[in-house]
Image (cartoon, rainbow, N blue to C red; front, side, top):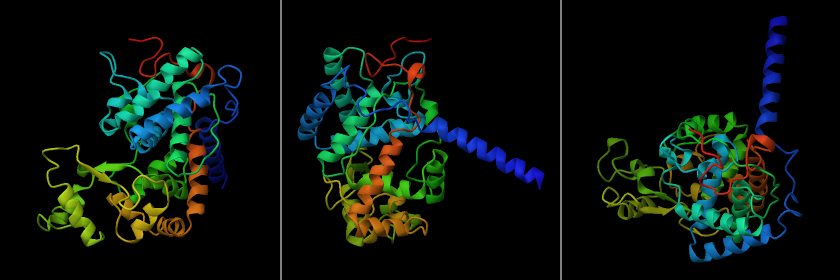
Length: 335
């Protein structure tokens, strides 16, 4: 009995320690730049509006970069670092090679403007967090509070992504494990996956669902897919081997609008990725999908909670990070 009590106490202490390390609130504040860079939010907002109007996929791309950045080593702009002769950076990990350039371009432009306005003050990680929030709101999603004061990472390695991001060929159990490892619940997993209501995926990410499914022949597709949808995807991806950049929208109904149609699509067999459709099959996630499909307000509320939590994950403050002069390079290059 004593041994069991000791083990439980040890696990509790470890869990509390991990929670304290993973989510930082104390040093983040809404008005962090009020005195040091008062026009910061206006500058970001103007740049976001201009970029989204000229490149409508920017919102989805930036949201994806934000998730990939935060989920690996915390929200610290480590995904923005460029590789050099001494180090293969996070951005060049296989899973990050398809991250859209529009997002990187946006944050780089904002950073350049802010360096002229208030040099060495605003971190790239705070710019990314605010730009993501503004873009979500711009395409119809909920507006939420972003606490500021993040510092940019001092390290970035491609190997750090291993096991920290969900993969399209994983089971729901495996994906739940990835989220739980970072302190996120099943409900938060489903809410955050709702971000697939905007954006697109390349054919290679779901080709096994629409061609030769389970070795059933060239035109065999996943029977959980709506037949006309599957055949339409087959036509769209007919030349994916010759052109691996071919992609289709995650939400075929309202691809440019942040809403709950993604979840309604899953009920109709219109999920693009196998992991999308699996959310409507697994008994742990199906009730949440059904809730969000019938109640957009519930989805938005839970998405806001999950995004605010994600934006605090693994945040670096004080001497644990720096405010980079350029988002793609550390202030000092170590060899």
